[in-house]
Amino acid sequence: MSESNQQSEYLLGVNQREFERLRFQHGVWGPVTRTFLHRIGIQKGWRCLDVGAGPGFVTFDLRELVGDEGEVTALEPSGLYLDWLRGQVTAKGWNNVRLVQRSAEQHLLPSRTFDLVFVRWVIAFVPDAEKFLSQLFATLKVGGIIAIQDYYYEGLSLYPHGGPCDELPKIVRAYYRSGGGDPYVTARIPEIFARHGLDLTDFTPTCLSGGPSSDITEWAYRFFDMHVPLMADKGIIRHDQAAAILNDWQEHRNNSQTLFFSPLVVDVAGTLRA
Image 1: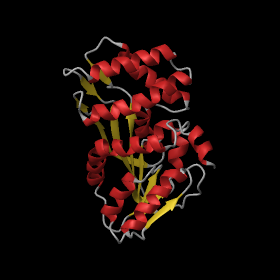
Image 2: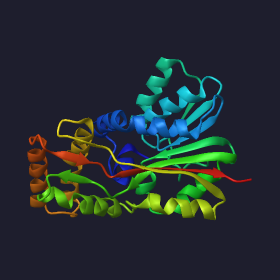
Image 3: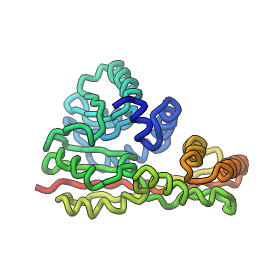
Image 4: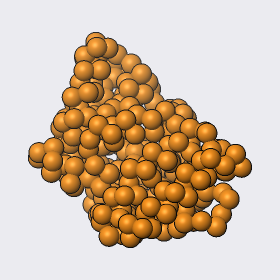
């Protein structure tokens, strides 16, 4: 698949600006992810699959946890992101990080191979989450763990209330659905686990908040500054609405009393039964 096709198929795009947004995003949300990984109890020597790895920021975290004895496979369709990751892996001298330029739907994954399959901010974009996950379940060893971080898209709020930004949660949910995704996908995962022979071992929601100069507010700004105009281009909102939202956001950034609350990000883990 060409890079241009990947960009058109992935709702948030594949480009240098999105790369930089993802890097900043991992700086903000990385501590939440690493806490989740430590709760899972990843051991030296584990074999891990990082699905939709992007530039590999979580791949680095997994490699540190499994050590020289383990192995991490980064599965990512974007050549742009994997080229950067390949350079980092080479510079670190790691010979146990495998890069595969495919999506989970395109790649014939090995069966009963991995101790851990990790999926962050991927499932919400997938039109058929259960079909997608069933492919990943088949790659787990008996007793292996699948760990998912994604949205239950409630909680997003910008205070003081009363401006065009109040409509953002509804608009973002429509944006996800426009690409076939589900902004509430994490609520469905426990029942999917149960149907496929997995025991639910973790279900932990997180909301981050901060003032106008906080990293979490900057994280949100970088998303909305990039994607609100794209929402208008897709016809989800009018262009004048997009302009009003971005103006309202700037007014909040200049208000020392502003508080931003992130949407809920849910950690979900399940273990494959014998």
